[in-house]
Length: 132
Image (cartoon, rainbow, N blue to C red):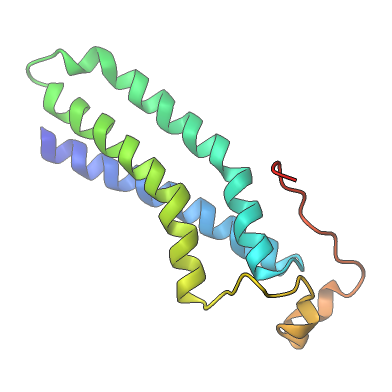
């Protein structure tokens, strides 16, 4: 049963990762700078990712005592806790490394890729972060 929990865990992790990367790509396509888009998308997606993981972890607590379903529940609970932290910390860092995003990049989309920014010439609105 632990293997079944591992397979279910892989699906949950992939969903969170795809949603985060998609949000980063949408922010970049909306005209935000790449560095700012990575930080903003991660901050905005942190609460939904953490809450869905917490709901799944708490939902597995009653199953953890079962002899048959217990190994699966414990695998999902532990793996989802670690994977949530990794999703929110490592995925944005890997995205930055993969696409060579530097922290000193400006938020000016025109300097990054002029033909991609053409539909977004109207106004560039910076992303407001909770830390600001």
